[in-house]
Amino acid sequence: AQSVAQPEDQVNVAEGNPLTVKCTYSVSGNPYLFWYVQYPNRGLQFLLKYITGDNLVKGSYGFEAEFNKSQTSFHLKKPSALVSDSALYFCAVTSGGSYIPTFGRGTSLIVHP
Amino acid sequence: NAGVTQTPKFQVLKTGQSMTLQCAQDMNHNSMYWYRQDPGMGLRLIYYSASEGTTDKGEVPNGYNVSRLNKREFSLRLESAAPSQTSVYFCASSDTGQGLYGYTFGSGTRLTVV
Image (cartoon, rainbow over all chains, first blue to last red; front, side, top):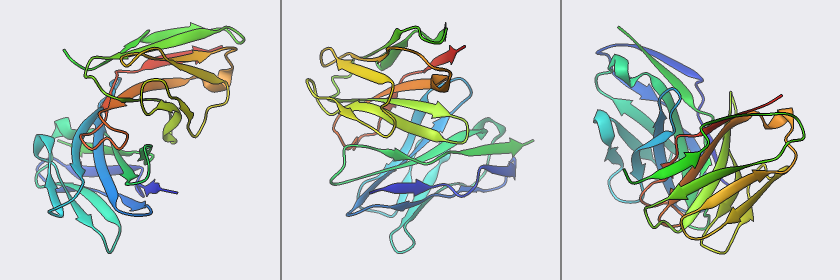
């Protein structure tokens, strides 16, 4: 069985400061990891993915994520937060043997001016 | 714009009524999914279709049925709506079952059952 944990329901950060949204996972086999963002009253939008290769993955809107196999983590990061980054962020995982993506419960990111 | 289109966007049902949520994608994706989103619960998979002609149950299939009408369309039916089915429903599609290029989501259907 595969699972994803987002340990923080909410993350607060001041504009201009770096941000981190945490995600840990559990799968059998090699993981395929994703981050999505959801703005109010909208569907989820793809941000970035890790399939294989470099552990640091760069995605849309200046976001990046670091795959850490030993810690089974895939934390989302951004060097300088913007107020417009405020949204709900979801981590997701599939593996080589599964068609079904499993999503975390989501983390609400609030960036204060 | 290319993507996943869901209809309707909003719906209010009375307990016991039935309805079908429609979903269509124009990206030639093989796999399609229905999720529900509830506060504090994240996204939970209701049903999915790995390819045209196949459907399988997800985590929370009770009270729902689906039809993969063709490669483009994947509908979700509530035969007898219950207040517990009040939720936001999202349809998604992917190029392969593992979504190696990511999943594309529709904008959602907000359903209230009274």
